[in-house]
Image 1 (spheres, each protein chain N blue to C red):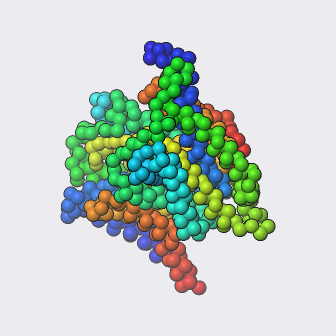
Image 2: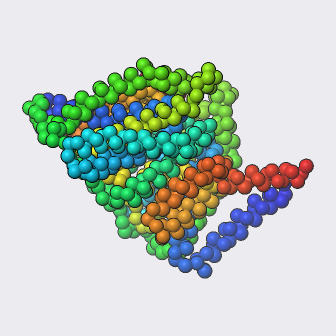
Image 3: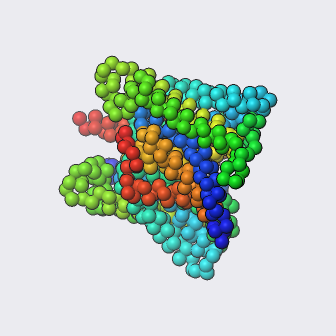
Length: 298
Length: 314
């Protein structure tokens, strides 16, 4: 009944656009996670916390500068950079001593980071939720398919390909990207030809975490910024990179598309359990291809 | 050999005796605390069957604990069935869910397995969290009519103690059984096991079902002690806390996880009295532990002990 009424063609088209703008955020966060997992072999549970910190910092910076457009754009740069700085300190301070440990230990270590980060967020920002409005240019709606569509989502839609292209350029056209890809396949060999692997790892970790911060900054105006927003994203991005193939950035893009689209279209069919659809899609894919859609670096 | 055999029998016997007489001299608070330790210890031990003895990275074990708790709670509140049905439903539900998740996950190994397992477990949590009509959503279910005989603090304590001891005994026998031996062989060298005709995936799946069933039992014990259930019981952060218990106690020992549970639950309770930021304390403790004692506390001391006893022999 609801189903038939909602599922008009324009509503479907609009939901797909909403899904695609969600995909942008998911892709940015998941590609960072995938990068770190592929090169450093760290399943970084703290990635979600960094995303949350990115969102909170964006809010604080934007508010400190009066809540105007300038504050927002500046926050969009400051927040990821700050997150990257934190991750740099953590990597140089602790992680580099742990690279030869088992994955389980690394996972638990990143979990302990999550515990510390989350309580720090609670300490600094308190338990209340915050909300941030986008700058004037991106407020309001445009009409697509005869239905209103938020301008900010349109902005995300345009940003997605830019970030994807940037990542492609980084991994395929720059020296650090090429070395990182080589290190993902065979880190000993990379070390043997005289490259400072430690420095490469550090850069990749910082770039990955920067992407988490960027995702958090971009998502800030679209939802409530709360304690616990890290939990949902980390599980979603885990699924995305599994379905795409661990360590493969294009896999992350594909996974984010599958996740974002099935989720947003699922809302039309069954709002209460829309979340089941992306999971079902992922399980279906994995039953056919257990190691994910694209080639994993593992 | 005889001495270590002696120790292996006497230490648990003394401990058991102390636990049996605890209600005679302990306050309500301590009876409750020890009940929680036993429950979480059983949960961690069931996880360790997979983690330590199977080498499987089961990242989201709490989902079976929560499922068991919800199964007991739902049977008690929504049907007029006798209480034993409710308690039998817990391992059944945990085992069945384990089978369902396991069938998808055992095709993968190590980290891949763990990441998929944590994701699928989270789906169960999401469904429970949102299904208000059936599970009570994020409120959970309160005031569950636990049978009178085991509803008081002391009654619940003795019930928990008895079930935990029996469960631990069964788990121990499983690990020592031919199945358990093969299971450990799969952990050590899955490729060779496959080559000599052991069906690795089936063994791993059976292991998951057993572990899930015992996690379900732990869940039903929680219902007995607490009288309520809520979605946090199957949230993934709890799973990682249980992983920490295994790590802390030493995941290559049978009783390590129980010790780890005692440390973590006590820490949680006593630090929680002084500060609401107890998770930060836990995080820092965990960091120290990973950096300094990768074998876990019990594992660390056992290693020392083995070294000393070896040097004495020479």
